[in-house]
Image 1: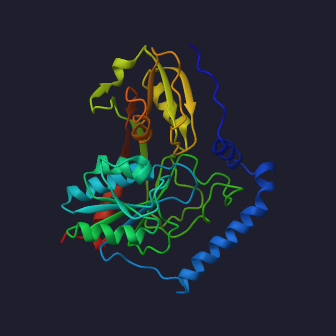
Image 2 (image 1 turned 90 degrees about the horizontal axis):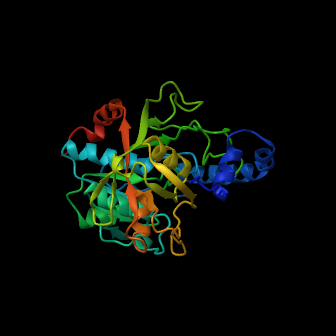
Length: 340
């Protein structure tokens, strides 16, 4: 059975534009100039002290990116949290909770609903074993977390390089294998802000660091791969090898769905059909393929929402291989010298 072509999403079309300085990208340059002026003014207001930056009071690490779309921030956050725990720290995670229907400050627990806390915070709450709080203002999430869990001695913020209201000690900038694309600001290019900009370290999926990265910035390569198993709704692990030869309907509501499909095929899985959906899609109106013999397989981030209606779907976790030098760099930071 051949995989049907799927209609590209708006983000797919933009990413195609962002790969080069083509006529479509050039047409968007006036909007990019407006975006750059507004974002530059925002940074200056904080630099001049007209807008206040607040520090949570414990070492704070921001894991973010300067490009729109998926770069692997959440897996890096989880790996960073696991490393800190291995050193005896008691970390907590804060996030805006993008895509949720609520607007307050609240804790994301393994029992939370994705529409209440966001799909990524829910994934982190289930996978990290540490407190996770969400709020529109990250400092509010930080304060609420520290009040509820006063023994927390380090915070990791999932996304937020451009959230200047939160003072931080360490900035980790993550890039996917497309680097900075055409090097232009949104919407003419993928950049949320001009690159290069000062950061503590860069993590990159491509063989080389992004173009323009200063030689003085520590850079480390990361590799993303699928776990050798899928997870059922009840937590049971299903080896991917056992799915070989069976027709699968693969779906992904992430920024780069084709990466997920390619990794599934690399595991010798038969994708009878693929379905790319907008990032953070809520699945409320989604219908599974009418052929009940086809197994639905999705990303771990999508599973929390998909399982609410289709508990027979299988989710494949994403695993990260990070250069050990990244963890050595964390260990060398003065604010992380000991978990006291």
